[in-house]
Image (cartoon, rainbow over all chains, first blue to last red; front, side, top):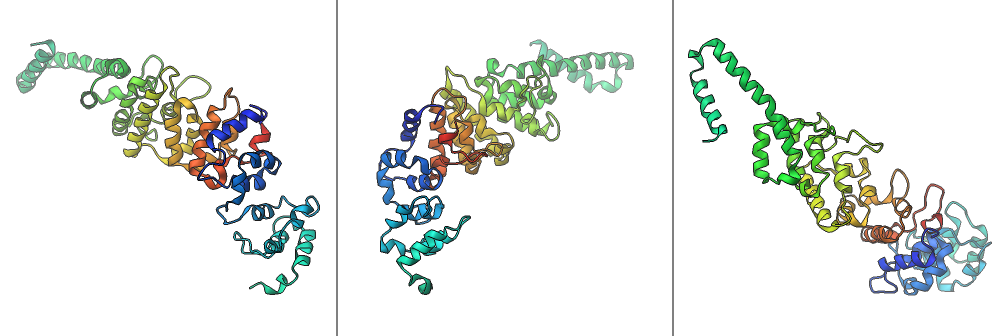
Amino acid sequence: MNTFGNDVTFGAIEQCIPLDGAGQLPILHRVVEHAPQYSNEFGMRYPSAMFLRDNNGRVLYQAELASGNRTFGQDSMFFLRMSDEQVREIDPGTDLYPFMVAASGETSDLSAVYYLLRRNPCLVGTRI
Amino acid sequence: MDAMDELYYALRALRSEKKSLDREFLNDVKDLFTKTMEGLPETTGEYLHNLHQKKPSKQTLKMMIDAVPSSLSYYNMRGELPIQSAVRKSASVAYIPLLAIEGVRYNVGGADKRGGLHVENSYGIDRRNVLKLLVKMRVASNPEPDDMACLNAIKELKESNLFHKQDIQDYDLLNFSCHTTTQLRFQYLAQMDPEGLKSYRWKPLIHRQIIGFDTTEVFQLFLATALKHHPDDTGLLFQTNDEGKQLLSAH
């Protein structure tokens, strides 16, 4: 970004990935996964991409959760904003419930696991 | 009848009467022809070093090589083979596939040099073989025809099994060709080896392409090409380098 500056860099990206055009890529999924610090810049330019599913079949909040970049300690609102339906929606990439996704990965987020299970304790006993 | 015809008929007549000729005279004639033959590779070799000016038909060129195969291995003043001279001028790159095919037949450059394609130039710090020069050759004033000519030569080499996917990694050809003046070659090589877009000497290639350029054109070329082959990874835009840094924040 420093090489060309913010505007020039994003101008170049826009030349290759048209703003909110047809046939959009799930670019926001990759942003939240790999470059969450640029979520705002990309979100402004590609708002419709938040409704897409990525190649794992994930919608945006699932990609965010699976990335491990969202923790209960640093961003509790992400978990608090999840609807009841989202709390019990199985992640298509791993075939796990959200609380399981939060428990997996390199850093198991116990606070998130606890919160998500408090929201729907039945999930512990309903896994097929 | 010109001198060449005269020589031909004289040689044919003498050869047919070889057994009846005076031995001393025959030896003198042999010495004379030996000297002529010694000069032939040099004369033909010099011609092969100037294909960009001579522009013979490929058929004629092949006939010349068949007649004087050693001319393919004739080194010029710069210590280069004809195939190395051919890659320096856009007007002669079309001859490279033929020179390489014939070069394989006659072991030009050595057993493992693939007809001279793998022979490196003998000067400069960054020694480059013919393949590297072929993907990098650019003339800023006339980029598109040159790019197309070089691309066609690469395609012919591939069809002749003289250019392999592994060469792209072995000689960093994606990195060498990632430029707006060589974009047809870059796109073709990327299609051959999409995974090669991911790294350059164990580092993300996209990070390499943003360093040292004044404009974003090269970056855009890379991103547009990578998007075609890696849409799910959004064109490798978010690859991290060995320090774990993003392209957007690393440079």
